[in-house]
Length: 81
Image 1 (cartoon, rainbow, N blue to C red):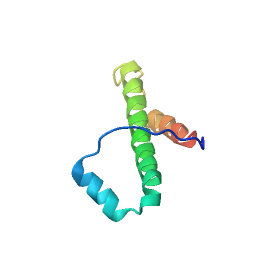
Image 2: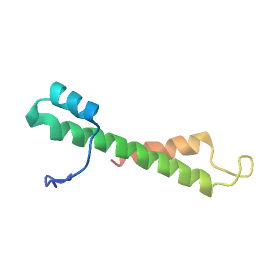
Image 3: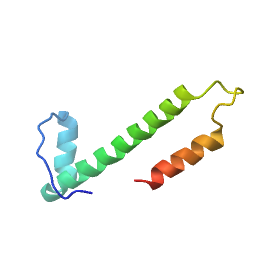
C-alpha cells in the first residue's frame, strides 16, 4: 500500500459531518474515512466479480458455476488483497 496521499474535494452530508467531527478526533478523521472507503470499495469489487462470473456462466444445470466454484473464487480474491 502506498504511503502517499492526495487531497480530494467532495461533499459529505451535514449529519455525517457532524457525527464525524463529534465522534472522531481531528487527527484521526482521514484514517477513518480511508478505512471506511477501502472496505466499501472492496465490497463493490467483490460484487462486480460475482456479477461478471454469473454473466459469463451458462445457466444452472448447463455446466455453470457451482456455489463451491464461487466460494473458491471469492476466497482467492480475498486472500489476494
